[in-house]
Image 1 (cartoon, rainbow, N blue to C red):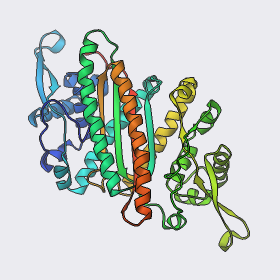
Image 2 (cartoon, rainbow, N blue to C red):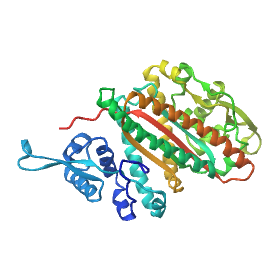
Image 3 (spheres, rainbow, N blue to C red):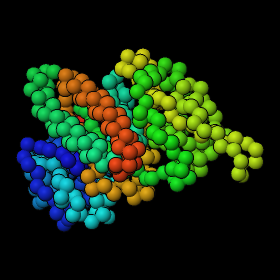
Length: 412
């Protein structure tokens, strides 16, 4: 469910009293599904599961009582044996404006965030298992850990608000075309921006002037061979970490983890060979006993153009996607474990599933590409202000997702 979703009617502010029971993954999942099409508790349980039909039915009644659902139809007869099967539809989305969100206790914000994340992960898992996640050549999946200052953080949040508003407009504009016979595409959009844990003090001490943030060289375009080699969660994690700060294989292994130090060191050497990393410093002395500890920094980012992506075999595309998703989920888990995910009250966590036509889908893909370009510009501007000592540094992770979801099951 989305924190900043919108529907035709203006959604109400949520008090802490209402927010607490909404911090539940199944209520959030009900709200997400009902926004796609009307359902009864029985249909929901049969199609998606849940804690049991009586509990799911109670969740539906509660959401109706709180003003999020209404009864659209009452079915009688058939094998219902005199019972009435109520079909519900959505009236409004769950929405927290910033002042309301700031008034919620920290533990309650965390519960709501965990519930929303569970819904997003469930939607991703469905798409991966159904083979639709990579079905569209221009699906979008990007995440990166960056250094924002407060000004850039606010600008990026406002940009995500704009994207969310545009998606609602795209959904409305697609409806007429779909009704007229255009192809209908069920798309899920995910937008995230949250504070990441600070790096270890030993890593911070070695941090140089941000190299990747000020790198104006063109993005590296991966060949099929390189893409296959990069379809590995630990290589992707190394790339993500080193775009934040220089690290040696030893410091990466001690601070982040990995299969074992020799394997991590081999991954570093491979990424240097392929042109992603370079040696920034060689450390000697101390407890190294004559050995040299090489510190690497990122040179360029892994990047696919649409033509390159389209030429990759589906198996390679899927391997790259799973690897990137693993890295994103690990970054989310790190922030939750360090209690930084909800540290900023204006952090952004949103997902929604929308019925789009092909024209709207292509516009959304272009819009997310533009947003990714904005991230790079904001990162460069932040680096300059931070280097001048005029700004607070916010280690942040941003993620943009747009992928095709499985077709919804037919009503029973």
